[in-house]
Length: 88
Image (cartoon, rainbow, N blue to C red; front, top):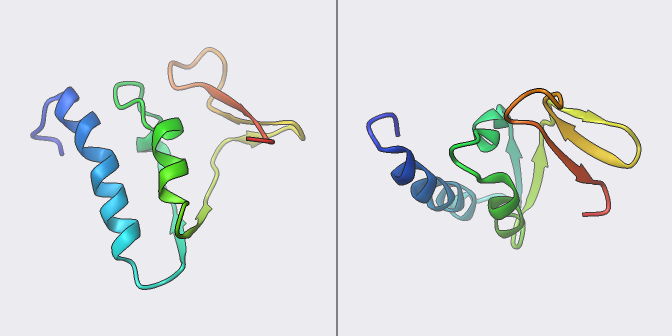
């Protein structure tokens, strides 16, 4: 993906992730080193995750924090900072 433009990477990533998940022979998929999904230029995590988990169970190695009501990735002063309600 390094040889692709930013736009090409953003368009290709969901398809690659979908291929990886859908071709797996197991019903449970472990996602580790998910930092790429938070890259600001790719804008992927909210759009990609729900589609990936429709037919498979995803177990994600979360490198952010959990405060009881929210998942947070990075710190508020970081460009990749994201905060999600747990109920989503």
